[in-house]
Length: 370
Image 1 (cartoon, rainbow, N blue to C red):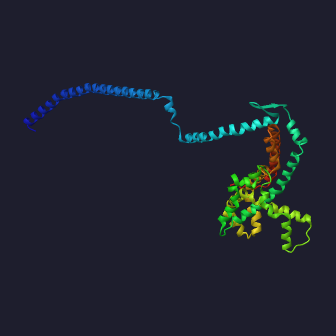
Image 2 (cartoon, rainbow, N blue to C red):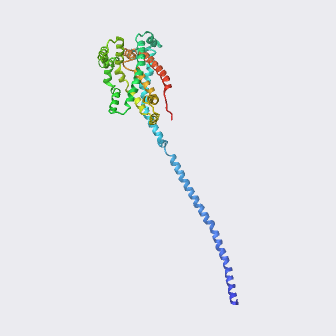
Image 3 (cartoon, helix red, strand yellow):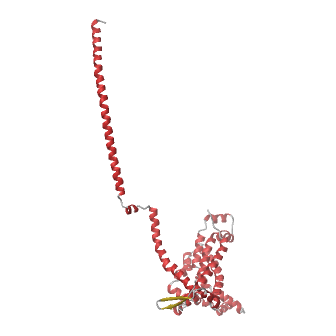
């Protein structure tokens, strides 16, 4: 290397050494500026936090300023539906209290008193069980009427239920005119209101409450039964047998008239029998008789209880019932205490009979559990 080249190299090294403090100065200046930048950023972040805190405080304040009534309007949908339901049944509940429960309690109070109509209201005296004692021990009509009612109910209830099941099984089959046949058997339930039921019960001209439907079954008098038997070639029948036949046939109208609701109940139960049960019975080769007793009867047995209760209650409150006639007649004569006593005794007997019947029948009812 020549002297000139060495000199140039030394000069370049010197220049590089001179530049080092300048670079260090620049670095020192950048290091001095960094804390300033950091302080500005932290100040800005603190300002943002204060602003967000103020916004949250304002939102809390506005929420607290909402009236309590306005907050209560925010009710869940399910609860609103429940409140609507309570609103609808409230009318029924109030009506039941004022028009049913209150008069019922008042009649119970009357039954333990002798009542007398005076100026401005009713006067009650002699509290006790005198009315009940007189009804069962001194009244010559009440106890015989009660006994007759029990006998008629005991006889007619099985006939109504058996006939209802028989007609329901027929109406459940597929045949032409099935809808018309169903309407015919249910027709008494529809038209048994207003003037029609008054005519049937014999109330239109006499104003009485008994002896109604016998007007419609007068075609089955004893002499007509004799003529029918003679027409069929049956002669010299004893009067006792003719009277029995006449008694049975005279109730045909009553029997058909009182079966509308029961037929509808049994028909709904028959239509609820699952198809799988029918298919299993047919695969096992069950006859129609076996199918009826092994499949049909168990499946309709729960509806048997409803039909039985309805039939018993309906027979007890029938207008042709002599007990009801006595109760209503006593009420017409302003003997409200004595009338209430007979009605409450009648009600207690009905309740005991229903409890016994349900306890017995419920043991034979089949309930299908999934």
